[in-house]
Image (cartoon, chains in turn yellow, red):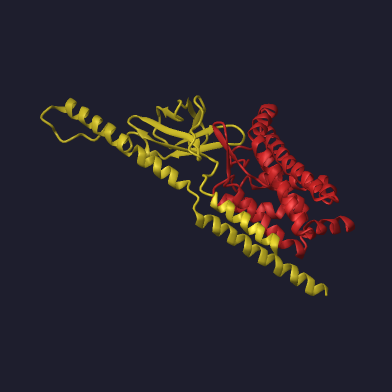
Length: 188
Length: 207
């Protein structure tokens, strides 16, 4: 009994230390003007080392090109085809990150900078396009922290998941007992 | 320590799955009714321990505690660690379902090896001697797991030596922490519940 208590205490200590984030590789990609921008990093919040190779494939696995991360773990890629892009980064030691940017989310597909003509402004088409680009850039900068927060939120392991997992294990122990007991009854 | 989906080639995945299935089958047959609670607790410990991070340079590694599981459970570590890995893959997204077999072998096989290498030591007369063997087992299990991960990567095309160096180097602090943890756990168990390893001796007697 005492060692069971000790084990429970150890488990609780582990749960208390739990808020540490998962150690896995995360990547995201999004349209940034005419470019695709993305991030590669560990879910602990550390970004991928500068110069990490990011390979780009189409959904069928054909290679579209490659790019490298900068010192903030951010990579940029200029798309040449309006297809779904798959970005893949190998951080070594079995850490492979993959992120997919669907064709519908591609730069241009949303129509933001290129095709939607701004309401005819007296300044003329060129001026309107300038304003549009400025607004698009400002909005992108504004939502960057949000995007990061959402990415972090997706990786969050809350107490429910931990307790749920432990619940499954307790259930399996019960199942194991049942099977073992049945075997014993049959033998005896 | 978890290899993720997409890092390994198909033959390695299949080989890992077959080995894991064999290990789990053998482990379930060795899982006596007396060992079930210990298996459950160690499975839960393994499941949660992966959330404890040790910062290493630019990255971080997490605890594994497969050595301790092996010392107590022997072959039964296979099903216990498999369940932990499965739940980690489902709940936390660690590793993945396709590489579950490879990860199970990489983590549970060292546990079994440590069990056979250290079981005499653990049963030593003095609890302190047993604790030292426990520490050796805890550290060795991590080193073997790192080697197994590097081997799986090497079989899939990565260069073995750099991969092994990278994985092993990253896990040196974990080895130290786990050696201390296993040693302390063995010492505690020998003091308060010597039967935990008495079970092991009984098994060794008739095996």
